Image 1: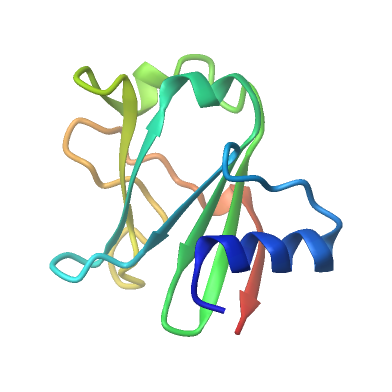
Image 2 (image 1 turned 180 degrees about the horizontal axis):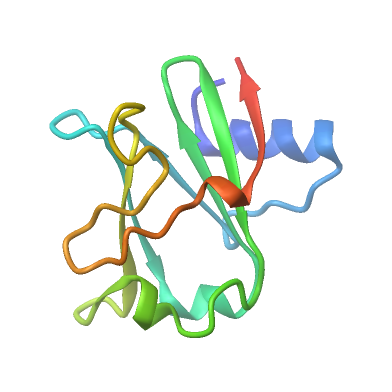
Length: 120
């Protein structure tokens, strides 16, 4: 498995989940900075948002339920040019692991929203 489509299919089959391209965002660790970088359109936060964060040997499935925060603009940097939440989630286990470290963000901790991890 190496693509968003394959990981979605695997999780849907093994977990009886309902992940789709529309409700799921996917990121590999950035080569220049140890982060998962995502831009998620703000309208997607009207429902459940799934994040698939790929490492060298596993996928971390983060599930953000509808209403997990009162106001996404308070917790996350919004890119006005794209009307999208701009995330840099730390992949560095020694520094703010699974927290949003984007400049202008609040350091939001995603660890409490990890639904599962899959070694592949």
